[in-house]
Length: 263
Image (cartoon, rainbow, N blue to C red; front, top):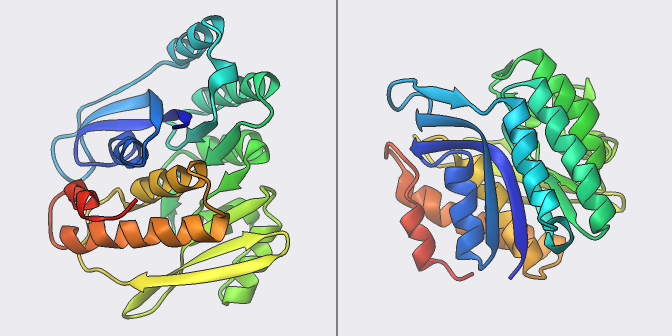
């Protein structure tokens, strides 16, 4: 069992953000300390928009309390996802630097949630803060193709170009989700300093939001269970596909399908 600090959004209904990431990590046997950056009643597009952002001073106070309790040295990983403000990004980055001082082996997993479908869905100031403050701290980053293009300022299209840009992004390991999309398949690309590796899954119709958050939890969980990166990616994608197959044309991800997967 590993201990993970997870900082992202949380919803009461809809399985996005921490509501997807945390169950995946727990299913794989890990202890998760969750800190929501924003609370929503339902995922966007599912129900009424009711939300409460955790003010950055409050986020800082909670992180400070954990630090004062002597928790940092026992952490094996930090995962970051959605942030509503650049101030919240700065608070998280400062905490990660202090966590690294307490435990240099702690893995930093940055899921740079910026946007998709050729548009940002966070403010540009938030995207810039994630690029400038969190990405340089990452051991592993998992942008989708749009996010990779935005973060890099490049517009790669071919697989080799995508891999080259991903390797230049900064983190030792970059996994590009939805790197290439065909009518029946979607490819995920793993890029490291030594090369790249690609895996494809079937394209699933009408899938509810949250697949990226679920994938992040599955991938980190398998890495913390000792899998090599390629094996962890393969296992995470197979688990993800089982959930997506059960979630076709459903209003929310069917996380119960994890119970039929092998961990």
